[in-house]
Image (cartoon, rainbow, N blue to C red):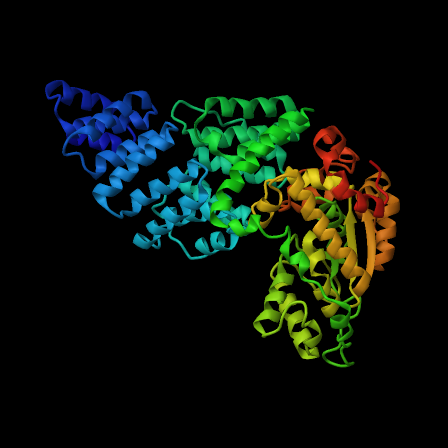
Length: 606
């Protein structure tokens, strides 16, 4: 009968397994194997209040070994009792040593606790035992992603991995992570493979719905969500992710009260949600839309505290150095005077038409709206946000030169080589040829102005501006992954200091280096889109195309947009975000002495 119970569990017949085990224990209450299988069958049915006491009894036995503590740890984790789960799993580690599965469990438990740094350490130890294990690599990449180590996350999933024997739920998680890492085609292929294996798997369907929502395919997302419910056998993690996606879709439909209620219910239920900064960022957005600025600020303070506590342990220097430290990488007048124009011929500087159009500005200043407008023009090609200018800074430094002090020492052939590197990187995403001009939208490329002016002196630059108070507030409300921005936006004060550092850099360097710059004020753009769009196309030397007046339609056709504005740009252009800071005046006005110089410079009133 014990063999039958084991077979029932192997085949997912948990009630039958429970029945067999209870018969065995009625005959012999000391049957440890039957007790273990009974506890496992109860855990599989999510009857954790019954399973955990059994696991605790097994672990309390004098000769209890690795398996008893590992099982107890997993059951406690399923119940959301993560601190107790960690102690049980550490007990298993003491008894069983470095086993890949146990280290995976410790990593997953740390992720539940919101400790991505510890999770990554456990999972990297697991990879030493099983370097090709697709499940371990998936969750190690997830920990790296949560830790802001996006390059590490990509590298962990870059290998060819075998998914044949991997649970389809893990495949769905890997696909969702790849999607958020901008590997859209690979992600959708993996999600499709998971669907082929199990078209009704709830985790796969949930992640497919999330992809649809992020690609602004809302009807498809809602259709899938209508089929998903929290069942008795659902894990807490599934319930949490389902509630967050339901809240996102409710917000997209302007049902702000439902969105907020879903978040608050999650937090009342406790468990992993209490340690998840993502939940608090999402709650803050719901409170904001519900007209409760105090609730939004309270949620944001909790979210930032959680993010920064982890980061401060790993990279304390980010909290002690000046905000946006690279804002000090400036060219002075003497260094700029050493720049020499390229000679005519093969290495000559490209003309305006052959140069990228750079859209820059502090994040959350309207750059995504500008990019979406320009991407609708048939003569332009946009590639979403890419950090390829940083590759060129690395090239300068790897050549034994200082950046930016030694830009004047670059030869014409080196400049040409750097432009070729940039073009090769760009060609991975868009067709940039003689019939199209490239739009490179990356807000903080404004801190790369010396590089832009050195390599593309005839490039047109669009500077996006917005009321400084709205910019600071909007950045503070974002759930950034970049460690630099996690630290920068720890408080409203630190966010404002970062804004000031970036704007000081721009004003200083643009006054010195010049450039063909068009200033686009967000408030003017949304107030009179036709006039501003025509002025912009005139500046860029483009023929007029009315598609620029429907950026919302183009955004829906475009699909995935990686920036936080992905939902806003699918709506008709409106002025709802103008003056958003006024509802938060109690928290924003103390920043006025810091922001006043920039408000006055660009004509913004308080």
